[in-house]
Length: 546
Image (tube, rainbow, N blue to C red; front, side, top):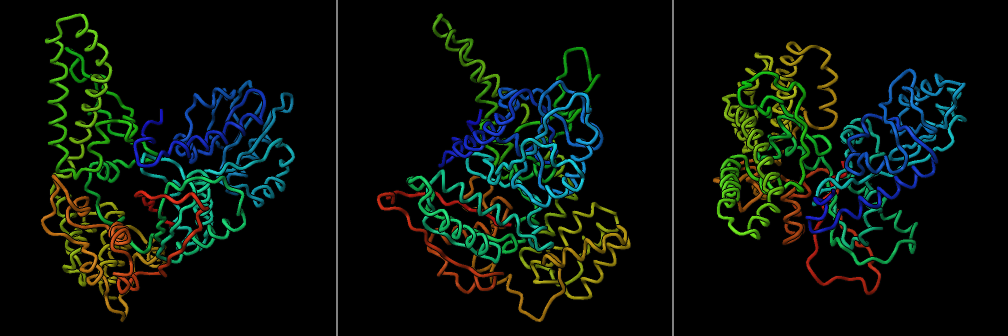
């Protein structure tokens, strides 16, 4: 079921199984039949850990979404709330508990994810319902195995919390998650980092290591190096339009917790004689991970190379089905039949990804997409970053989506180390007059986190960084790439270049560039127990702290 977690250089299913074990132990504390009331935000992350079948094995009979009023009726002994530690959610839970039928009382339990909160318990006490709970516990869900080579905290608000609200709770969760990782995979000997938040995570992790010295199992280290990078070290990469197959699916349709919802009409099964009647109205929901052979093959390809890959796959599948005509003996027929389920799954997968590619192509071949991409690439190469972009001006006039406008303006600001005051004032005025003065706060927030800012007297270091780290590569080979710049058709992500230089020849070769980037850079060593040193090449784990 989690075969995609075995396909990388590290078996991430170990982490998933540890999380499942903790979940089972909590559910078994609540003896008897159960109904889970979910904080809706948590259903996606938990879906990456455990399916409904696991919950059912532990007497979970019903599941509801947390909302005000009364909990829907269910003939169960226990009501279990799975929630984040948020005060507004405690108010809803208190309302649920207070409206419970007193003639048929049930046991209530709360599982806080990822940490128990005294403030939340105090709120429940103020509402007069704290004593109604039999169990109040926490479920530590920090690093979630997302795919064979990817862990995620699934904490989409961490950047906002760290840089806008000065709330560093997510950094503590990152440090705890890394401690869990080391408990399962061994001590990581080398730690490198860049940025204030990265420094905080490393400090917390090293302090936790000292506090729990001697308590961890002696495990042969799997990871050789941990690299911690602040998000604000590389603000440009998330602003640029992704051009890989998976990246464009995310740009256009948004991938959430490993799933994507797609327009249903492209996936309608038309039967002969029925024409186009009764087309589905519900979005087509697909899971995307490396367990699917074709997706694993094309996910990281530049979209311009996907068509040829799908065509090649179609020929292979067609040839496999044609083999049935060559099956003469009973043994040959039996062998063909045994391969049939895999072949049918491959054909279904091909049909799905062909439909997705067609949907993406409709967007990427449009004049607007090409114009937007051209402006992005001009900014990244330092062309016309110091004056008002006529393209952005036209997009505002046409009332294009605000998120598109803000991404382009912020990209221009990042690539120019801020905008000239008159350019910045022009953009602000145009945005507020077109999209409403409610966005004064939006613009203020972008300035506060450093995405949008007036140009200072300081020198613009971006051209030097771009040249030294080779962030822009001409004539990128999109079909058979030999450099990471193919993912943006020319732009090599700064965070990836830092990782590559760290691996070889080391950061000492770019000391001057590191000083130009925000925050300190550092190196720490952790002592590995005698006899547990490895002598082979080891993988590097890259973690963004915010």
